[in-house]
Image (cartoon, rainbow, N blue to C red; front, side, top):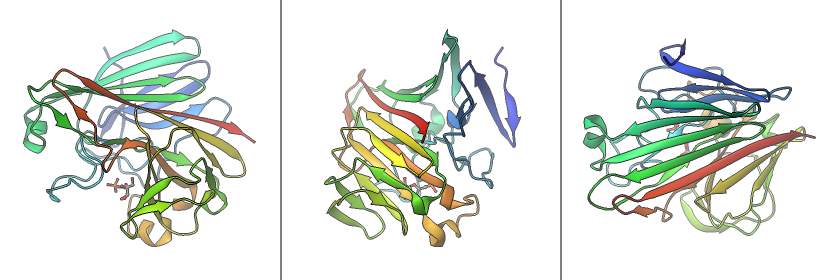
Length: 281
Ligand code: TA6
């Protein structure tokens, strides 16, 4: 029988091997803690995060699926889709070696999902825990017709101080700026954070490096060339009751968003992967 513990209203599993440890809530297949032993936690979790049925945890890696952000035609549907607030099934936890564990979780279409999105699907999250954290989100179309998705592995990374943090790997890349709703911007040099940043970067085909003066975090994306970067800064975070201390968080999200919306034919699959690691300077 699966052994779970409870945080607030949410059941979660705890995984540990010789090099790392993690906590994964069954609601949303939401990993909300990951740490390489002897290092600081890699993922940020808000001090005021709510562990409540039907509410996404503020921190860790929420799964935005089958749409990223607001639904494109019906604003009454939940932001970032429904996968992050539905209950997933734990399929297996497997020890690959002393230093690597794999966890698989699954969400299948149901009456509840069909009332929000009219397609049959099977969504699988494969998590690999070792000296790095690897998440693969596999969408399988079980319908008789093709469908399109946007999605994101909305990683909240822990940084020392957002004002001292910069991202390398974005130079000359085009981006959509959600803050002023402008398209076709081009990044000049490294990205630094002096105000709210909410951007969808395209053509990202090499790993990004986040440096905060203490650590280098590397984010590698597979299955897409889109990465979303978000920090709400003071003004927006003060309006979000479950978001404490925006200075120590930075979202760097492997995604398919905007026109990067893969069409998946019946019986075919699409896989989005993010690989996170960090080293201390
Ligand atoms: O990924 C960035 C973003 O889409 C932002 O626009 C911001 O609103 C954030 O996600 C958080 O969304 P949430 O629905 O979790 O409050």
